[in-house]
Amino acid sequence: MPKKSHRTKAKRRARLAKEIHGTYSQSLKSVTAQPQLASKTSPETRSPINHYQYIIPELRRIGILAGAIILTLVVLSFILS
Image (cartoon, rainbow, N blue to C red):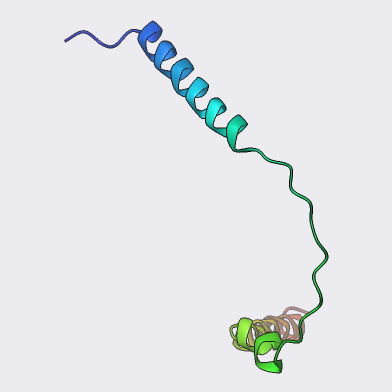
């Protein structure tokens, strides 16, 4: 079974690129940004506790592992010296 030629694929890519470029060039418009007033947000939405709920258990787990490693090193230093 013959494969598609590279020329056919290249023609298709070129045609698609022209279509995409044409739609983007027509849709671009000059936009001026207007300043927005700072809105007050409720403490519930600004609270980082809601967004980072996994941090405290993760820090606890890291602390336990670090303590176990340090304790193991101290015990090994007494045994091997």
